[in-house]
Length: 455
Image (cartoon, rainbow, N blue to C red; front, side):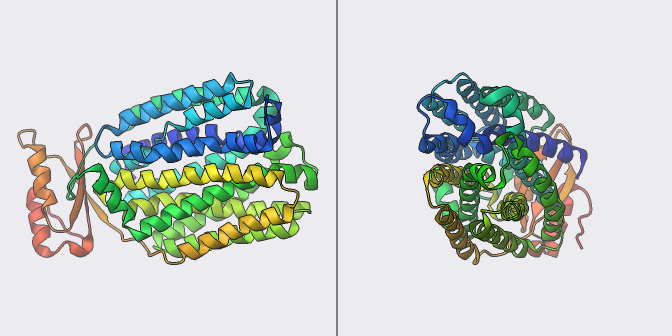
């Protein structure tokens, strides 16, 4: 990656990670520590954990649709302000319903898809997979760190302190946008009406399978981490404020296995194989937990398998999505995917609360295994994505109209999209090598004033 791509990936990945860290730090501790709030019940504690997911699910699609028409940077700033405000309300709460309202407002800053779309805009196609993988790993790592930091911080600053920490993190994240260049995007597909964009995405079977995958992943993850703290206390004798020391080594071990898997998936174009293997691992993890949850080693082994697979899937999904979504509906596709993600988290929080209330622990784990098996069946029919290439060229002289120049390039057979970075003085031309014939190469060479040859 060049300097601009590295800087943008770092900034947008950090924005995403800060939000996820703030949203998820309460997950491993709230089921127990949240009992301090007036009116708290197991069901309401689960609702407080998952309610941000409902807000995200309802608003990701409107935010992403706007993101295909208006400034993505402006939407990101607006979403981060809502995130900070909601956490501040939760920090000041004394009643469980006040916490639920604060979490709902924090979740209403539904900018996940817009952040992903902006990252796709400022990276070349060959580097996009790497950037998305880094983004995905930052998301997965932030989840894992949340489960480590949450219990540790709670013992020192309490739940109120966690919410204040998240609120401040949201404000600081706005400053990171200064590192991301301004970019204008043109592509072949017509803009179309909101309804047409939405329909175009929903008619793509592979995209739908990815939406179901992210829904299932976060449903299982949220339910598991509402449910697992009580299991670690009861069967492993580990107090809540020490749970972070359980998750930390498991996170490190998972990274050791996950990173090579991601590299193989991207470099060797084995995305589908690695992805399916990760879903198998999650299913195996839940089976281990359902059979051996009464033993410390069973709980640890099950969590280790889950962490490894979770990191792999979180890293692969954004990259895969960016490869198969048409440029004109990129933000919309990511919005539906993010909506599915947070809807899964909402139902996972509610389900986790119900599992926490259940007297049949074995049956509770079996229910989660059932969800994993359904997910495995749906994902079995996923097709491998196609791979585009990128040509980096200097922008033409100022006297030449950039819009006309871009339009001419988009008319070249095989060219899918052009991203213009004015400050940097360059453009990324993204194309399908299989569709770029000799005549198209010659025409493109004339337009960019340099020889164009691809191996």
